[in-house]
Length: 66
Image (tube, rainbow, N blue to C red; front, side, top):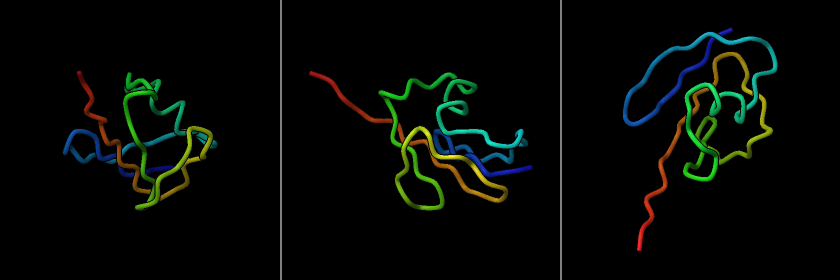
């Protein structure tokens, strides 16, 4: 199955196994959950959301500092 990943303004098509969650994807691309917001097809989702065939997943880096 395939989906689109938008990460740091880079768009790519990725293949995945069935029942890949947002958390598993973040682990694979080495992005800590605490530093990003995830959109699935334009809607903010939680880490246990399952990615479906044809989804568009956008990883938005949170900017923070002191």
